Image (cartoon, rainbow over all chains, first blue to last red; front, side, top):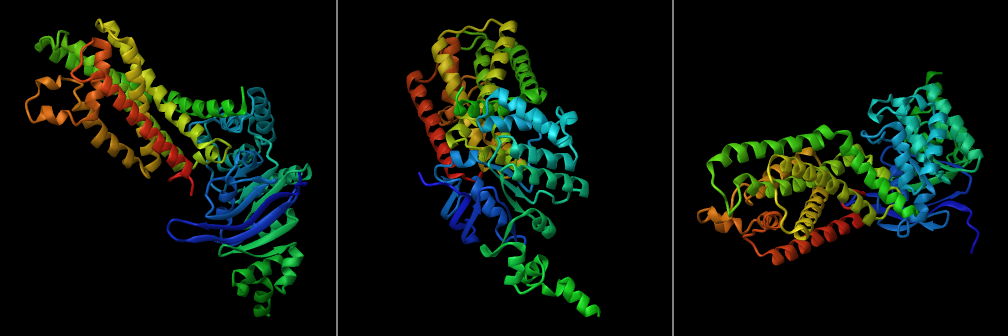
Length: 258
Length: 255
């Protein structure tokens, strides 16, 4: 068997919705095992659609998705076992407590009871949720819900963690806490795919970054490579070039002010 | 336990856990409703009605009430549960797991099935305390109730999957299910109806379901028991096959 070095390998992925909207237009992307990778793009660029296709929440129209070499579309069981998703929406089950949210999730992924209980205890403790373990999820604060979403994604010990805008709307303290945690698990070997609108987040955390616009990957590389590809001095300026808003660049504004 | 079994029982436990957490609404209310039917129709109205087909009126209506309890609870549980999870998007947790369409469908189906079974069992127990309820054909009774529960559980799943708002669920329950059940002869014998209502009743599929359950309890039926059982089995299997196809396609569940 060939050595598997790609955590995620997407080839010519097309997603056309029944309305006719083509959200992904032949996306190809490779993320190496152990990498911390960011996917940046404006709203509606196709980031969430790509994540949904990878995790089974959307059905691709064409193309191939492999997670650690496993087909994620047709023979998805192994692929899904390897992926943990922390979605953008706080999609917790209102009927469950924090503890049940984790235990049920572990069950959906086939974890035996003893292992579920131990892992639940560990994650509740890690994310400072132990005191709230018997509270229904709808009564938790926004920050606690966000922590629980991340804990749930990690419950079955995925090898590829997908974070879809994990720090949107969270306070600075929690953002830094989440950063430290994901950096730690990345250092321990978990591959991470991050989408974010905070460019400094991508720059600080990720080894490589891809720009997606209008359903296509338009550029990828390190932060410096992207800046030089667009002929600008920073990732932020490269992004503004991508979205056609270079007049918002700090350098541009400073030049105007001068 | 294998990983598949753990997955399936976790999915099913979530469904049972949901209705047990709101049991005043999901178990208590239907039980009270059935008790009120027995009191009002059985005790009050029944005192004015002689025996129907050789049994007291209150005993005559109990099989239909038990069937109605199972059917409505199986339906409404599944329709509401699926719609709520779609609405919160918490269903994504199950959909992004390795669970197959068959595992998901069976877990969603048996959640409502279990709720219907609990309410029907409690109704039977409560009715048995109040009056003497005979069970003439236990195998036909169990098979009929199982099939009725399964059929309405599937109907609940399909409505929950299709629904986009809570009004959609109540529409089917109020304007389709309850009229079919009430007009199917829960409270009366179709043989007593004048034409054209008697003939119209024969076009109501629930009439045959009530006939089966009543035969199981009382040993009396206005319908062909074997044919009704066969058709109910085929209808339940057809709905299950349709739902399985919808789940495999991800219809209104996956984008």
